[in-house]
Amino acid sequence: MDTERGRLADAVRQVSAVRGRGRRRSVTVAAALLVALVAVFGVSLSFGDMVMPIGKVVETLLGGGDGGSRFVVLELRLPRALLAVLVGAAFGLSGGVFQTVLRNPLASPDLIGISAGASAVAVTAALLFQVSGLALSASALAGALAAGVAIYGLAWRQGVAGQRLVLVGIGVGMGLSSVVWYVMARSDVTDAQEAFRWLAGSLNGRSWGQFWPILGALALLVPLTAVAAHALRPLQLGDDTAAGLGTKVETGRLALLGCATALAGVATAAAGPVGFVAFVAAPIARRLVPGRGAALPHAALTGALLVLVADLAAQHLLPSVQLPVGVVTSIIGAPYLLLLLARANRVGSGG
Image 1: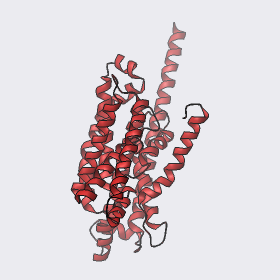
Image 2: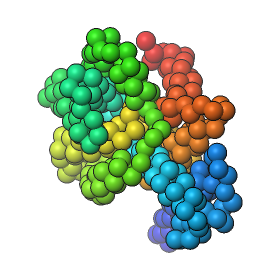
Image 3: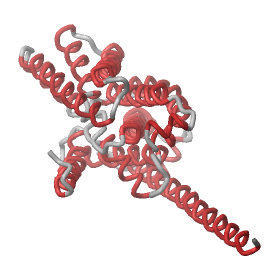
Image 4: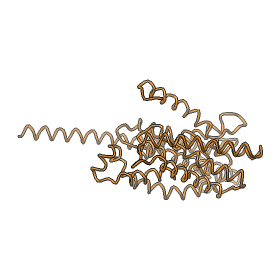
């Protein structure tokens, strides 16, 4: 009896030690991502056509500095950098929820039709009805939500299976993309060029007018996602097991997918459909903290860092040319998608 008790105590200590190491690694990785994010944020505020020492940037942020430095830092660079952080965090969090709930690495809003829905409605509103400003952002959000509802409804068969929803989403996304290109082909060349720049995903020319709406939206959506995420662990065990543990499977799944769709929608409304951020942020985060499940906070930090670094590169990679940030993120994400498909084919699960 004493021997069995000793073995049980050893097992409990080993489990506690493993959990403790996992928590410490999780906190350490989150802190490292946050430090890297702050460092890149500082570089983005100090570097540009007018290079400023980081000390002067801090002084300006605290209310000092001359008129020129205040205009450059507070009106040009700060809103763009903050917007990059929020857009990246929203895409990263959205991708993490989609991939975890649907248990599919291809389940990303830019691959399963959510971003295509936002693009189709926004481009149609802009080119056919001359909608602009906050109304255009609202149309993009409405398009993302409508696409999410349509995909969920088409994939419903006494419940929603992840593989079926992904396939339906890819099909819906292709159809919506054809709508985008049809509208652009019927529009004036100059207007179509502006729409194309938005479709590439861009932070060029963004200001406080785009920052405050997404900040307000995320102030609501992030807590809602955190509450809905309590159903993630049971759902990862499978529908039958989750139901056996008392989880309302479809209600929990619908709440999570609704939050993820809204997150992708507000990010797309603010910066356009920035490609592949939602797709790669969560897998990177899960590799950094293995065994921590969805790792949603890490996915959000990874997405924010990715977009901020990509935007810095987009501004300064080529002299006298500001690329859309989506071009840089696509350069990162497209090879990852090809690698994922190649691995799936090697194990016999590819197409």
